Length: 246
Image 1 (cartoon, rainbow, N blue to C red):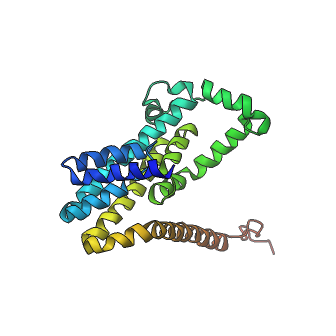
Image 2: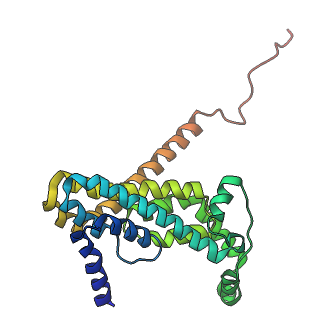
């Protein structure tokens, strides 16, 4: 298993030494968002080191390819799970025009039929879908920015019928942040930063994400606490609106 992946890694990396490197970067970034196992960072780093001035251009290409690939992954999930998504792009149309509906496909029915006795029921799926949609933006953003497999969440977003606008926004922010951070580090420090990126970049993205989510959570908690403290008690007596007769 390791040897085939290593050959695939080397195959991905070799495009940096060809005139087709930027095109290969877009294609690999696209494919990695739904099925390809090698992250595009590998080729992005090599291209940025080979032409430091074009680092941000390569990051732009990588971001575009990855986000479009994410949309493709979203469609895979929708097409597999819903019969009302038999035409590619239906979920985008549903987002634009408000078309809703759940008509499960034969693939979904297979899971419900054979895994139902183990808890994979329509009711539990509906609960999971509601939870995913409540936190879907953060799930997609974290997967897009960190080493968590982004492809898993692109397909899951289609299966759970996540709001497409939220999915797209989370993908654009997360993927762009990741690839532009790589390009920015190489633009600033050149090749000497490569070993640092290889060894610590994924850890840095995880730490940054934990701090970001923690900060947002604490801010929301503080805001809620301030609102509760500032609100008048609901059972407090209203002010005297009438003057008692002497």
